[in-house]
Length: 280
Image (cartoon, rainbow, N blue to C red; front, side, top):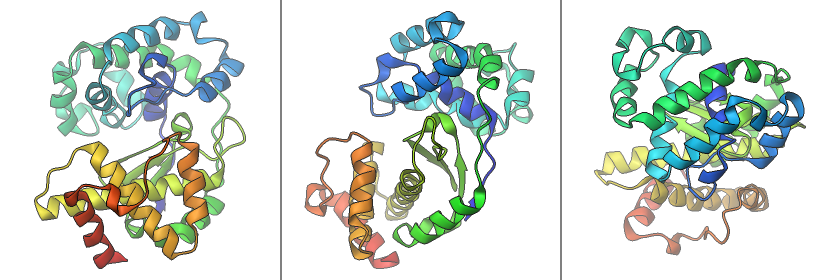
């Protein structure tokens, strides 16, 4: 596996979304009061900047899980802040493929409408403030070693790059073979163990998604997420690390989500069984 250097653009996008309290009940939400307090300690309250108003408006327009999840694709559109800034004066629908890091995202983001443009604008306006946060420092050696010690419970992790982004904190995202997780830190957290298990979860989500595609099955994101929790829990039990997995799951505030395979639908249970046969 590879530890990837953090990129400023996705962290900036997630920094904005971490302040959008009205989305808190949505599965795709990145609202995080711990992160908000961390940012306020170093930058002052968001209400004292344009971010306060932008976060309130974003909360009124990103009203469904699907719309919020699609808006987050903006984090993958640009390779960095410089590339994003060079296009800031034009709408997404006007951008050329050679001006972005992932041209395949231009159409779905443009189709998402004004909410994505508002998020993009909010990120650009918050750029200077975000840049004044303390440096996000990470010693990649211990991080890589911790991932390698745990990788047996998530076999696909070995084929992925892992990027720490401070604004994700407890959460993670995966696209292609690139996994994004929080940055292990004292402030605003989380601990290294949580980040490692989050990376394992994202790798398991990817594995199940690929298994579903190979089987011709069509599953929603939430179904895949639940199946990933069940599969990772089973592998953690096999490795004698079920308590570590349970501790990670408890930090996410997922309530009473079951880690037993009989809690899944037939299709999801079949995919979990197929992954177990192929990779243990």
